[in-house]
Image 1 (cartoon, chains in turn yellow, cyan):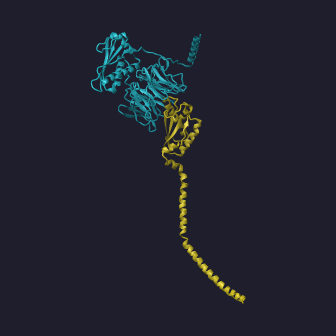
Image 2 (tube, one colour; image 1 turned 30 degrees about the vertical axis):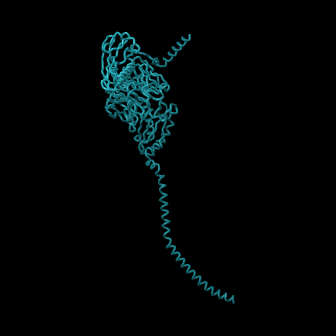
Image 3 (cartoon, chains in turn red, orange; image 1 turned 135 degrees about the horizontal axis):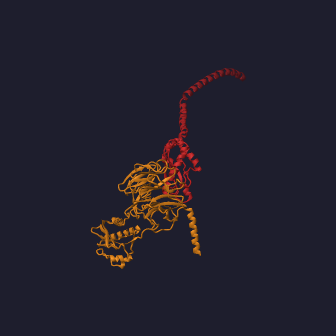
Length: 198
Length: 428
């Protein structure tokens, strides 16, 4: 009996099941649809958020990329002449005793200085010629001028425009090292560069 | 034997050295010129009991003593001689007394004090042999003028003897005592040091105009070493040449021209302008350095230094730039020529083994005297208006200071001590 009923039940159950499955699946579909609708309805708010965030991030990411591109000129523009001169981008050169020709060791230094001047093509410089104390006041003032002039000529020969350079001589009146020995004298026989316009 | 050997060696070395030097260098100190005139300068008589009058008498007497000794023209009688004769009575001078102690001249000074802070100084000069009154002067003033009174009356004495008076002249120089190189001036003896410029930039190489009213000097203004003309008594400054580096000015003694060195055309050359700085003319055309022009007393020639021969040497040229000739030989570094007011000598700096000394070249005899002898840098010689003295800068004491010395190397005196002092120029 029980078996029969079971079978009946199964039969009935099979029919019932189909209906239930259909019904449930219909409900599920409805739910799914509803859920889908609900999802579609709920979805819009997040996307703007998601879209806005990347925009902010992009804006943030762009400037660091642009800054390094402009940096050297912009930094140069932003700095005062005093700040630039404090950094001394142009290295000084030295001379032999009583002489004013450009030494071999000074040529690469001047090439570097010329490259800098070509990069910052608006910059103007003053070349100061200096001497050590082992010359007379009068002759040293002329010798310092010769040193700044030969430095000027060399930079011009490397393609730096002459109207960007001024020269002056201080003779022995502005020693870097006030000592009275060969080390001090060598330091003091020099042409040094001051940036006077940018 | 030993003495003879030394003598022979000396002769040998002198012979050798004369082969090397075309001009003979005399290192010995030479006393030359006429013997100094014996002058009696007894104590001044004071016609007043005031302390001021007594102080004035002492101060003026002291300064006159220093001036007369400095002159090298007069020789002061030792005070001890005065005790051998009757005391001086200005109203009745016993000339025979003064003759007996070998005085040629007698100076009698008297001080009276009429008002407070004010004295009257009267000075009279007598010729002992001729028993004559030569001249007399009266000065009135307060304490701050005692020094000037003494200098003025000694200048009058110099004039009587046909000498150029210079005790009231001024020396202009550069000092950094206030932190920056500025122009200063002082009396010949280092007194009354006064600051003249307040530029806050470096001032350099001053030179008096012939009339002593203006000073040309280099000033580093706006990245440029320009030459300017200062009227210290009017407080005026005018630019002369501001193109390039401009320095080493020298006024012609006739007051008409100003020579200086400029790089306005690209190289250190010598230029001449009118004394007001106008009508500029270039005198040298040479790739080498031409610098340190200095006029002859006739204003017809200019001495200067140039390395056109390879090393800096002294050259002379006519005031128009022609007739060039080299006058310094036997060394590798000669600069800063200073033509003596007597015309026959040129003082200059010579560098030997990194030591600078001042030498005097006699243009007539070609004889050279070494004036300074020190292990130092002696620089920027400049003659006194009478040519018997020079001033120069030296680092003898460790710092650069101004010194005066006589034409024969005698009487070295230090004139400055505050800060460092250099580049002197003595007004004519």
